[in-house]
View 1 (tube, rainbow, N blue to C red):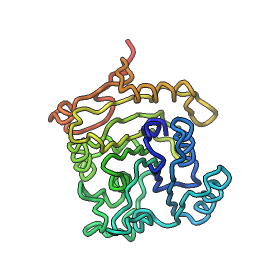
View 2: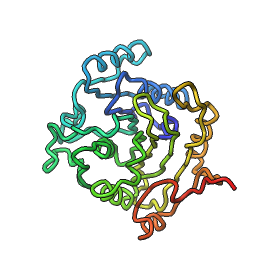
View 3: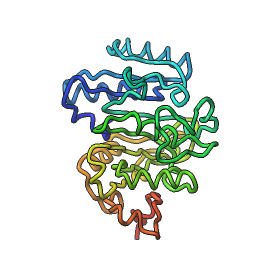
View 4: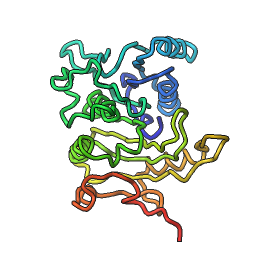
Length: 279
C-alpha cells in the first residue's frame, strides 16, 4: 500500500482496485493509507472469485467505514466485472494492489486467450499451467495511462524461461516495471516459497531507463513456523523505494542496458544484480 505511491493522490476522484481482493484487507489498508496521508477518501473496487469470501469482503467494507466500496463476485480472468461502459473494455484505475493466488494451473478456464476482448495478452501468453503473469497482465491492462500497481508474485516470475521470458522481455522494454522487491521466504500461509513485489508504473514508462531492485530477503523475524516482517523491515523497504535509493548489499538502480545485455537476457533474478554476500 505504501510503495505503490498512493500517498501522492491528487484528487478525491482517484480509484483503488484489487482484482483478487479476498476478504478485502489489502484494499482497506490501501484506502486507509491514502486517507491518512492525503485526506482523500478514495473509491475502492474489488473482485473475488469465491462467493463466501466476496460476502466477507463486503461485510469488511461496512465494518471499516468503506460502505461505498464495490465488491464483485466472479473469476477476474474469465469474467472481469469492472468494465468501461462506453468501450466494453476493462475499466482503468489509478492504483491497483493485489496478492493473487500463486501459480494457478487452471487460469485459462473460460479465457479466450487468442481473441481476448480486453487485449490483456498483447505482450505474450502465459504458460497454460501457470497463471502468475496472467494476473500481472490483467493488472497492467487495468491501469490508467498514469496508473500505478503493486502485485505480489512468486520469485519464479523474475527468471523462468520460455513464454514467461518473452512477456518479461516485453514489459521491461516498455518500461512498465519501476521496481522489484524481493521478500523473505516462508512469509505467507499456504506456501514457503519466497515472493516478490513488482511495482508497475505507466507514468513515464517510455522514458524509464532503469529498475530499482531491492533484496529485502534477509530482513525478518522468525515467528514460530513462519517468518514475518517487522516494522523496521517494512520501514526500510518503503523508505528505500520512495527515495529510489541505492543501499550497499540491499538495493540498486539497475540500468535497462545491463538487464538487456545478452549475459543477462532480461533475467530479473535479484542475485544477478545485488551482491548480498558477507566477507
